[in-house]
Amino acid sequence: QSRHAGGADLLFSALAAIPVVIGIQLGRPLRDALPPALFRAIVLIFILSAAVQMILHSHLFPAL
Image 1 (tube, rainbow, N blue to C red):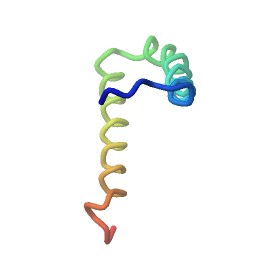
Image 2 (tube, helix red, strand yellow):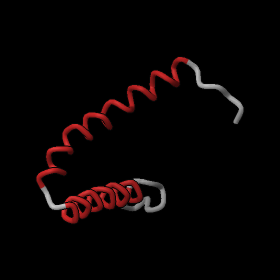
Image 3 (cartoon, rainbow, N blue to C red):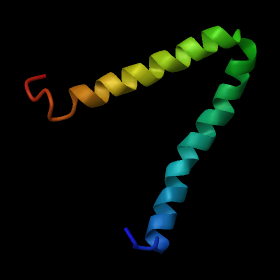
């Protein structure tokens, strides 16, 4: 709780941000080309599919 981030923590955080920045840059032209409601629906579908995948690969459903 009171730990301060070290150099390794900052490095990993910066490296984890790289795919986010790339995704934003790649998604901007798509966002501009699509109607806002359709773009939001596509993003929601991707988020929901990622959530389902994480749940299925968790220990909640070990037989799947």
